[in-house]
Image 1 (tube, rainbow, N blue to C red):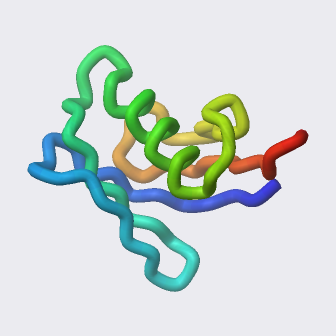
Image 2 (image 1 turned 135 degrees about the horizontal axis):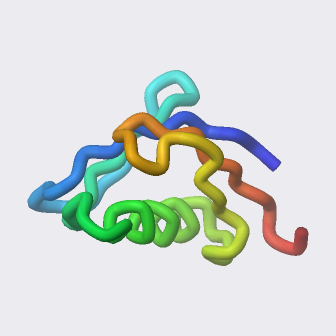
Image 3 (image 1 turned 180 degrees about the horizontal axis):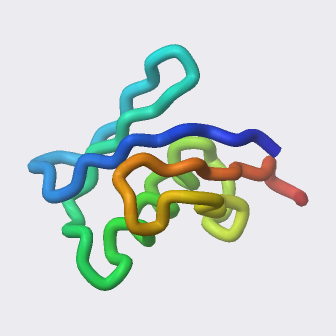
Length: 76
């Protein structure tokens, strides 16, 4: 399991991810309404690390743009 720090920018024109010294910045097209951005973030991070969505968990920052995520390797 690894913990990553993510800063989320919502309502972006394109979805992309940028890593800077172990911290990630993620641009999402979703708006921060009714948990849509959190769901899109989990899907995007799972695709980036090539793990199932169930292996990505938001530990803190559910209602904040700065989040801590746990990513479990596939098979756990």
